[in-house]
Image (cartoon, rainbow, N blue to C red; front, top):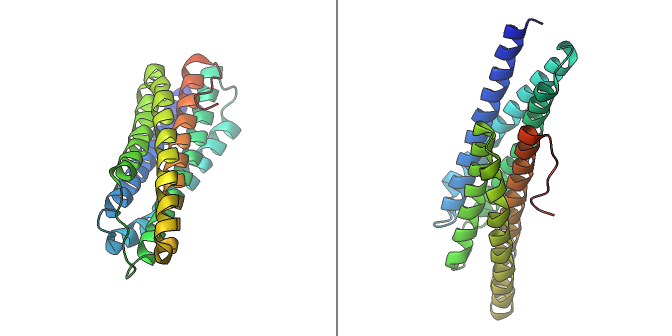
Length: 219
């Protein structure tokens, strides 16, 4: 494969990843906003659009496999880039699944008595979403400093998780009829924490891409 052809294919691979990242960010942002009103229509859109995210992951996997199978030799920096794209696509697919899982819980809650949400719940989801955005920006610009900033943000998300778990467990004890809804909210808190972890995983790969050094942001 000629180098110019290779560069074109890698650029298409990168564009597919950024398109996938945009879809995942949109899904996550919309599902967090839907929690303000428990909007089941928005939830339905997010569940439907998850298939588009999955399709892009398959496309990226196919491109990665083709590049690794036909480009010989691949220089070290090229290999790191291709493998990093494949890894990030896998992380994004999981975040898309998380958004769809929250959307299903929103749709299931239709007709149930809604629970008043503390401000920290929205703040945690928004921070996790911002972390995902920053991790993709770090990849786009190969910015290891931005990737390193994810560590402090992840610690803030962990603090929110601890605070909200205590809040919702206390609410369960005080409101037994709402246990099912509150359990769903606890699951969402865990999902936000997992989104933050996925973002730090992406940040770690960006650092590896730029420096060829493995560094843990979420030990």
